[in-house]
Image (cartoon, one colour):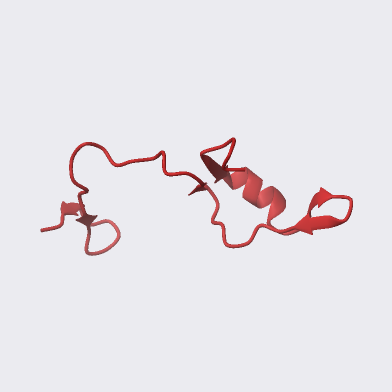
Length: 71
């Protein structure tokens, strides 16, 4: 798959539709959605890179508190 695609994204609808049943791959094989969260992307190649600047870490003490840049 990585030869043709950079990433695989699992939408919320895709997760809800397929998470509770076996998914047919071919006549003899099935698979399940395991280890994926809804609305998540798994990158298969290294094409995604950070922007020009350094990474920033943000945090907040609890839900509802304002986000602040970590020291």
